[in-house]
Structure formats: C-alpha cells, structure tokens
Length: 286
Image 1: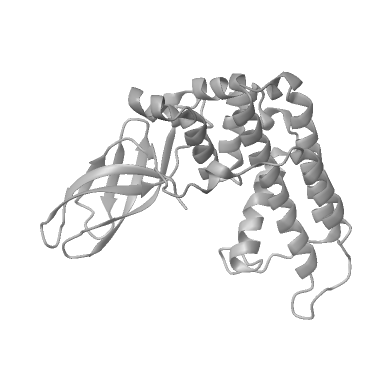
Image 2: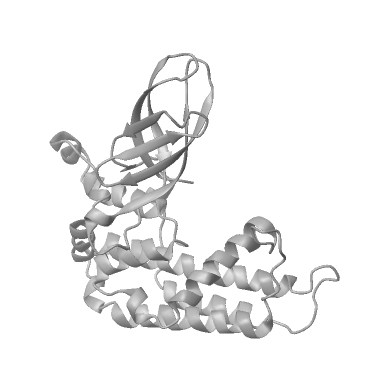
C-alpha cells in the first residue's frame, strides 16, 4: 500500500469534468545526502468522478511538487502538490503495544527457523520449498525487529522522538491547531505511531534514514553485507508474490541451505550491531 499522496487539479480528457483529488504517489527516496535530492518516480492512477474512467500515468515527485504524464494522453502533463503522508483512517497502530525485547524475539525466531534448513528436497515439484519459506520468514523477522524497536524507542523516549522530528521532513509536514493539541495530550504520539506504522520496513534505505535520524547511526555504513540484505529483500518479494519466480518468469533456485543460513547470520549480525549502538538512555520515558 502506498501511503503518500499528491493533491491534483485536472480536467478529464474524455468528458471534460474538472476533478480535484488526492492521488497515491511513490514515497520519496530519503537516502540522498540533501533534501533537495529527495525524489521518486513510478506509476499513479488518476480517475474522473463523473465518467468513472481511470487514467494510468507516470509520476515524478520531489519535495516541492509532483509531475504526472497520462499514459494514453502523453501530451497531457499535470502538476500536483508536494507528496504528503496520507491520513490513514485505520487507527490500528494507536493501540499497538510493541514487545519489551524485540531483539530476543528476533534472535530466537532466527535460531528456530534456521534449525529447519535442509539439503534435502522437500517437495517433488519444488525441491527448495522449505528453505524458501525459512528465507522469507527470516526477512519478516528482520522487518518486525526494525519496526518494534523503532516504535518502542520513539514512543518511550522524548529525546528519540525529537531527534526524529528534527530530521524527517515528511512527518514535519503535519499541521495541528492549538485546540487539537489542547484537547488531546497524546496527539503527537498518536500521529507518530500511525506514521511509523505506515512505513514499509522492507524498504531498508527508508528504514536506514529513520534509524539514522532517531539514533544517530547508519545501518548502511556499518553493515558490511548491506547489498546482500537488499538482494534478499528483493528475493523475498519474488517468494511471497510469485512463489519463488522472478519477474522474467524464471524459478529462483538459490535457496540452498548454505545461502539461507548465511543470510540468517547476516541478519543476526545487523540486529546485534543495532542493539549495541542504541544507548540505554534512549529508554528514558518522556
């Protein structure tokens, strides 16, 4: 689910109805050194509320605006507002209580699933099925650890929250009235919880930015196997969405015991370094 939107004004190319709508756009890439270089590009869909036609388009965004080019009408180029965090009406994350020790849970999970790796074929039509399932679960354990650790520290420590607010331009685009702040003393925490709950934690570049902002260290620069992790996340996408087949239609046969065991070791090393970098002072409550 994409969680960033641009407000666009446009006249329908087919019925000429004038529309004003929020359009989902790709999240900006925050890995660049300068905020002026935060950009994204991808696909978006505009639609007309009058004739109910959809208009797929290519979209390019930066911190100041979004540009849309309609696929079927390439001469139509639209400009939308800067991409903003979408106000999800789902309040699930407001009551989510992260575990007290995400590190121990992650390490135990990795140990347990790692014990299931095998050199034997586990399905007559899909020999690496079990190892591929273990591989996917290992990436999921990493995502869960990254989310639980971040949301727990941010909501328990005023210092961590302030550091994140000082760096993250997206959450800083939120606007509140004094009345709203007076009526709800948890307003800041609630919006931060919803925001962190919206992040896709397999987007490691994005998560690295959040960790660097909140804790002052970069997972990317301290992790010698960063490219291996990025590759693993991409492979997991093929496992979950295509049953181990890549976008070219080729079955991936890389999930031998040695490869998956190595990836589990890489994940263990990363979460151990994160735990070492996060200081006890970050657990001091507001």
